[in-house]
Image 1 (cartoon, one colour):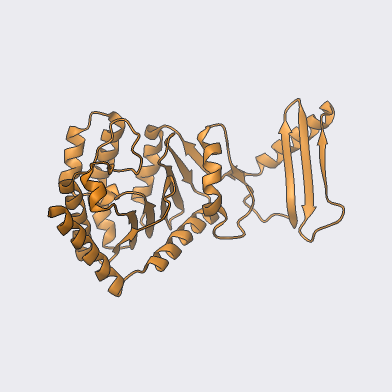
Image 2: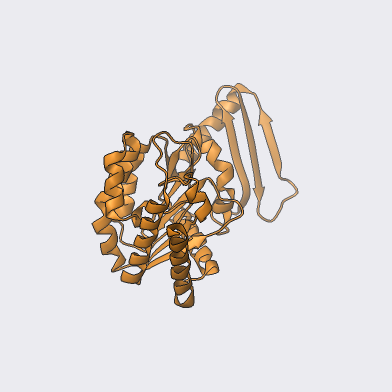
Length: 302
């Protein structure tokens, strides 16, 4: 993986890399120290078959070349060199294709005390009222969803405790009253294709919005920002300044990317903080969000 040169390098290219990660056959590594002044230094090896090698200096040398070979000895030599490079690198991210395998990294994320920012294509489960989470735990037959609701239910005391100490920016998509009344607004995800999926009713959506208002009134550190986009990405993004970011693919196949490489975490976090600044935080913006939530509750009640 190349070094970080621009904040949006990973956020903009993420949608193109997700299908590759979704195969479960891709491992991503990075070199933890400063690299040489090379613009391109690539080794692509198909063991026992072929190799492609390229190197170019940053200043743009006229001697830059790309070499391709099927010579068995050359392929073997570059395969050895590839593994020598790899031995100096560290994993940049871990891909969890099974939701149960991802639970430990979620628990780890919950326990971190730094500032949190998240961008989700539906209302976040962390802001759901206790009574509603308990209801879904009781009524859910699918083990994946039941475990997910239980995970957030168990974390509620810790979540509100952290709100007393550190900022929490919660950016979520708000659905319209018409979409909610049609009964096609999913709970806990923006995808409508999952087995065992729950759906919001006007009543349950109002309960969730009312709890968000309670959190805003109770904790100055809690910031809720509604997001309106022409096109929504097929992933949710969670970041914590304590060196951990999670990317959850919401389209099939469902998967979680666990990112612990510090520069990548910083880049994703900065991406979310800049987005929050663009939407507007604090002061008049905070009161405007309250008014918007109350208006949607009133429209659904009517």
